Image (tube, rainbow, N blue to C red; front, side):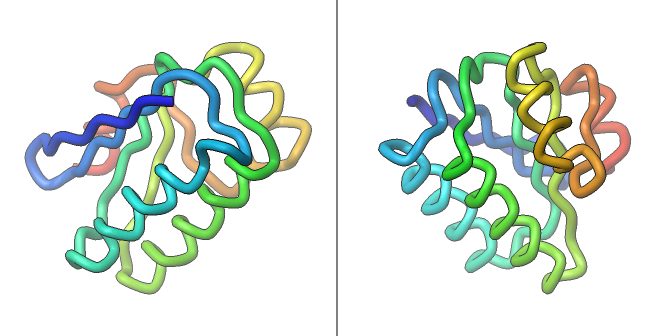
Length: 111
């Protein structure tokens, strides 16, 4: 899995590429943790190139959401492919995270 980060206006964008599972979720946990430590409150996880997510990946996102909430911040997701979106729907995570069809829609909502 590859993770890249950039910032657009006041929103930190974390882009994930590949598979988010038990073997790779630690990298995302570190990336989100560093944003929390820096006091960054608005985060968009761009899932456009995310091919797969396991329960370990879901746990990292949930833990991140709880940390950002403590900062009065928020985390949103964008561009989930159909398979990844189905995992979110089955797990009930669509009610936890704001999910947007495109990165642009998510950025507009978070700004």
